[in-house]
Image 1 (spheres, chains in turn orange, purple):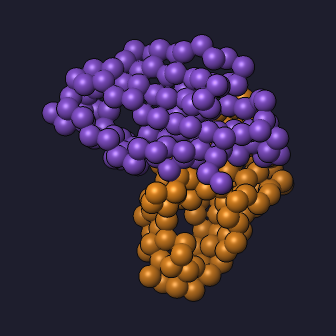
Image 2 (cartoon, chains in turn brown, purple; image 1 turned 30 degrees about the vertical axis):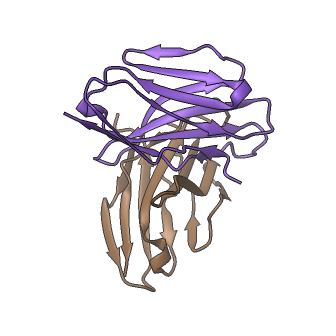
Image 3 (cartoon, helix red, strand yellow; image 1 turned 180 degrees about the horizontal axis):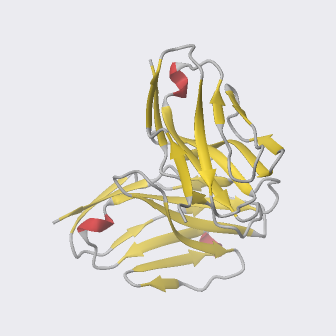
Length: 114
Length: 116
């Protein structure tokens, strides 16, 4: 049971490039989400999904796209990278999206946009 | 407005000292959950505890204890007899029933440094 996995661990992009951050979980969790972590700000929700085929925006969705074609995978796409997207990205999952469910996090992807 | 406030940006103590990390939250919900997560230098986020708004009993787990007081909207975390391995950034987070996606609202974190 690998839990939540993320790839890559590190990535450097040039402004304007696009890329996809991968996230997968093997716990059959319905709820998955993407957060970004910036210094001194805690984590902020980018997008989330309550199940395959269903996604919605979080607090800071601009510049990011997501899709959820399977229960296991929830990739995050940066359409045209900007320096403001330099951050650490965490993917999380939980059994359901309810208030009581604990979210479990992947190891994170450290992204630098030059 | 900041909904989860961790006023202590950084705390440094000597090993074996007790240390308390403060968390103050703001919500109009009567149903909510509070969480603590640990982020060690390796970067992963480790779940520590979840507490619902109807349960004000203090929680103890080994050297860790949590004090939840609704009267002061606080959910403080105490480490007794601290160890170097406790060095990490600790985050307090809130999940509110009225939010449709039950997203976690995070504090800015407290960096805890335990000196040998």
